[in-house]
Length: 166
Image (cartoon, rainbow, N blue to C red; front, top):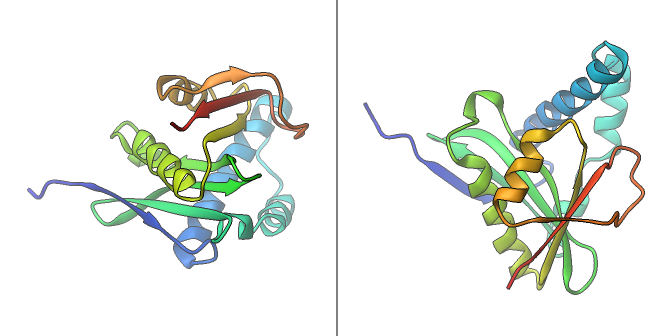
């Protein structure tokens, strides 16, 4: 049996692979929120509107980068970075498809995103997440991110993190 390995590489934000992973990511986090707060899945029309509203152009060079992880050659997940200023980058769209979780890909993706942020000139990475995304919060803490005061007023942000990229 062949050994399955991870690879992480830059991907255009508007490629078919990136679009499919963005749809999977958004569907999962939106459904989790609506199931928790309203006992239902996301309305399909709303899902389409919200996916279309954030195509990810801010995750393209020269001020950003989208990365795609593949496991055994199959697209498995994403992480993106975008520069907010000359020294601060924001971590976005960290996601692994459910069958790929627990195999080390999330940490690999975040570390690759940190490297991409350093290449863009960032010395600090920030991010926000929701309280119900406990797996994400545990991952960020394990990778050295520290919870901080809010750095934005995003409607769904409930936890804010930062990490120095020295």
